[in-house]
Amino acid sequence: MNESIITINFKWVRLQRFFFFLACAASAALILIPDYPPMVDLPQHAGQIALIKSLMSNDFAFESFFEFQLLTPYWLGYSIILALSYIVDITLATKLTVALAMMAFPISADRFLRSQHGNPIWSWLFIPTSYGFAFEWGFLNFLIATPIGFFFLSKVSSLKENIDKKDLLQLIAWCHFLFLAHVLVLVVFLLIGTLILHNRNPRTWFKRVGPFFCIAPLFLIWFSLKILNGTDAQGTGPWDLGIHRALELFPNMVALPPALNFVLPSILICAAGLIGGKLTFSIPKFGPFVLYLLLMLIGPNFLFGTYFVYNRFTHIGLPLLLLAATPYTNSHAESNQRPTKKYFQLLIIPLSILLIGYHSAKIISYSKESASFSKIIESIPANQRILGLVFMKNSTYFTAPTYLHYPVWYQSEKGGVADFNFAYFYPQIVRYKIDQRPPSDPNFVWFPHTFDWNTFSPFNYSYFLVKHTENLSAQLFPDRAVKLVIRSGDWWLFENLLTVGAAKQQFSDKMQ
Image (tube, rainbow, N blue to C red; front, side, top):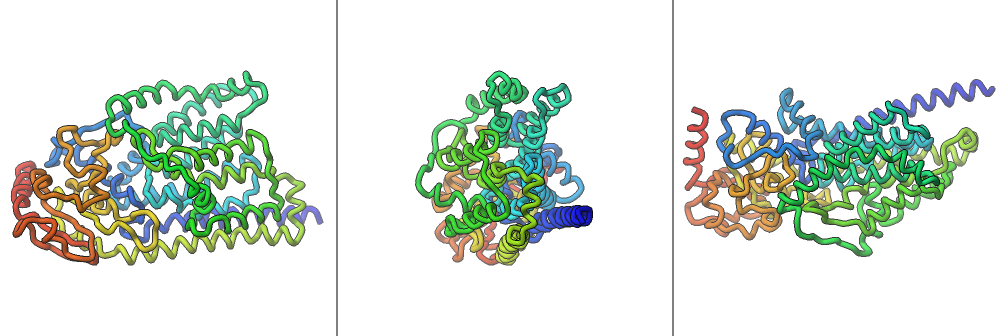
């Protein structure tokens, strides 16, 4: 009798694991449906790859505008896309990389939860939480770094009391790997790891976290260069404290609209008790979630030139909350055989599939909404300099301003340069030389109505890409300075009649 129960449970676990990985892959594949994913900053990251490849060639007409910066913690994500871009085009390489990161997040969080003896059925909820704040804003390197962070925590959780040479070398490698992925993820996950390794004896505790300090020299060098040389890393920004942080906390944690407030998360937390969950109030177990709460409620919104600092970490909250649950021991496994608890446990899977379906519907609807942009890209010749004037930034289906940086997709598709461009910022691998920075600064992209022809005309933009329901050429451009090339949906493409010939000739001369 007992042997048959063990056999059935083993088969159920294997079957559940198979469908879990299948669901992770299917959910990640949603990224491939639209021509351009609904991720605000993603075209800028794809544009960086295009600039890297262009500068590595010998026929880039705008080479004199840019310079490389090698010491920056963004190389890991960009290296993956760069490598893939020699097999497929840059846009597809970017989409594939994002899909891999979205698939890796629930798998890495699941591995971390199991390393802490958590209930593996809860890992299904990590799949839809991938489509949260960081996804909508297109924080590419952050999305790539987060799974690495959870794999790092899995390694930390497996450490023995005395760290041997092999563990030491692995921890050093993980720390440097995280630095190359994303500095913010490095810092937060090192703090989480420090709490997980907590020991009542301070000397033992410090000895166990000592390897984390191996990254300090490289971090300090990078930090010093960023502060001393990066003007965009200086100054202040909004801290954005307020009651809205508490109201949005749980919906953001599970990637649902803030209007739901505490309803669904409260149901999930209550359901945890029904299937045998019990919070453990110890520093290694509950401490990481307390750190998460502090970051969400009082952490900075702006830090050293980076906006949305605390917001981007919303999706790591659920794994940290479930870390605090009582370990999934044999006694709990037996208790779960009770019909009520068993049924509630089984509801986790369809609930997760329902949430995946919710995000699928949004992405499919957005794909139809954004389809008109492809005709615009097809109508612009390769290797031009264009300026985006996006007056209508929002999609019907997402909270973030999805179309804010959409014109930069041209750069990844056909080369050239599209402004506003992240090359304006100091931390980027390819950046504008200080004396070549265009007037399209980070504020301009939010306020395109500040466009002034006399200010921008010396920069020889060949095309202007406008997003609005109406033709604004009379308000934006001098008489007979531009002509309408094509309108597709709410996108309007104008050719600059005063400079486009000169720009074409400049590129032709460069090729000869």
